Image (cartoon, rainbow, N blue to C red; front, side, top):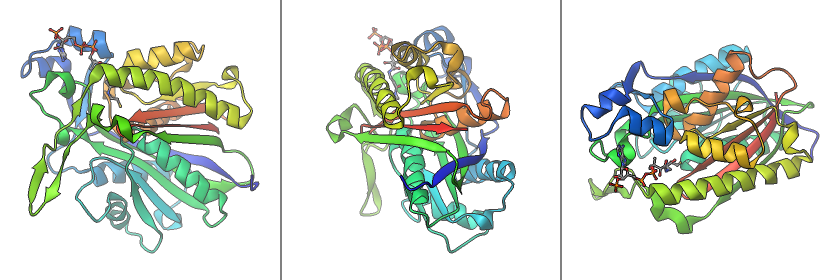
Amino acid sequence: MTGIYSRIIGTGSYLPAKVLTNKDLAATVDTSDEWIQQRTGIRERHIAAENESSSDLAYQATQRALDMAGITADKLDLILVATTTPDMVFPSTACILQAKLGIKGMPAFDVQAVCSGFIYALSTADLYMRSGQYEHILVVGAEVYSRILDWEDRGTCVLFGDGAGAVVLKRSTEPGILASRLHADGSYASILSVPGTVSGGKVSGRPLLQMEGTAVFKFAVKVLEEVALEVLDAAGMQKSDVDWLIPHQANIRIIQSTAKKLGMSMERVITTVDRHANTSAASVPLALDEAVRDGRIRSGHHVLLEGVGGGFTWGAVLFKW
Ligand code: COA
């Protein structure tokens, strides 16, 4: 402990204008609104316009987070963007975002941990902050999963959406982020992947998302409970001390099972999966921003954020608002 904490002083989010409902999907793939709602809790998702990339979504979310924080972009000392759908191979989406914000000089890099990306980036930012080098850090999760879906595969295309969420952290002597824990197990790579890349001027492999749904489901429920208990233990807190749980928004049944295992009623769980579907690294900051802006999360509340995703990766961050 350094006596330095990261406080979240601003949140922001952005959803592309186009809404794709389950009914819309049922017109193009062999599925139904009923099936999707029953198995996943998803009703609709947002889809980026053709000219919108992850950095555009990130830019909009960042402007809103900066507004709430009451600072201008030039005050940022470090920029982290969690994304699995970067604008291009390089430069990083963080560098592209930096240029769009009209600022330069401070370090900027992407964090690639799929649906745990925001949790990974937030934990990384917190540890940088505790080094004492920085005063303001921007952490963004931004995704355009619509670009990496096989729109003919009903087992996956109904599950995802596009969006971005951002937070601004400020160095403080008051908590702040209390603890974070991250994990990965690369031996599970094949159950959720986009097995393609660019090589010799061509796409090699298959650059579309593939998933073994049942295996992912089981893994997610197991590790989301484990890492929640681990981060609470690290902060010396009990399950009952948590005011709000914000898990990765992949499937309402995964969220309900996690809440049940943690002994939390669904009234203390923030959910957006019905309207956003799974926006990967953007899902947690999108849900956080919604709950901050509608007044559910209030001063002094303890909030537990959790992510799980391809890799496999998983992690949790516990903070005091
Ligand atoms: N519409 C209608 N039927 C569908 C369908 C769809 N969109 N997708 C799959 N089905 C069918 C299957 O083909 C299967 O039919 P069959 O019995 O004739 O073979 C049937 O529904 C059951 O499929 P199954 O995969 O066993 O369903 P499930 O209850 O496991 O639900 C998921 C599937 C994908 C919703 C579920 O496994 C899940 O949510 N997994 C985790 C996904 C996730 O969260 N990924 C991201 C993690 S970061």
